[in-house]
Length: 84
Image (cartoon, rainbow, N blue to C red; front, side, top):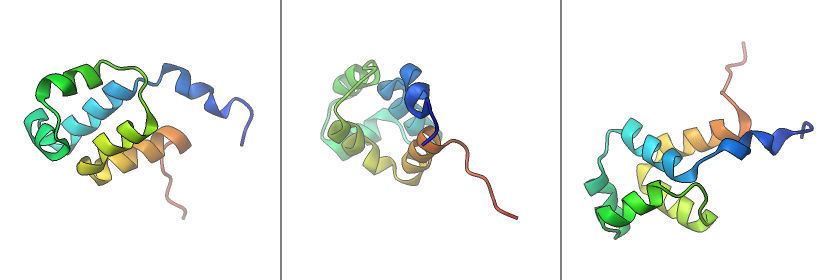
């Protein structure tokens, strides 16, 4: 891995990331609350968290599906490029 590879995560905000994935997917907070067994108030608390346990992060993102995983991949490896 290139030197400084993980430095780009210094500004990563896990809660905002999840909230952004949810909005981009077209689902609302009530939908995610139903899928995860959380209340909407609990979701708002999660969205405010800059850091969270990896298991919780993944568990909350799983119902969102491809929109979540594509953004996780891009956050780690950068934008996907198509080989000619």
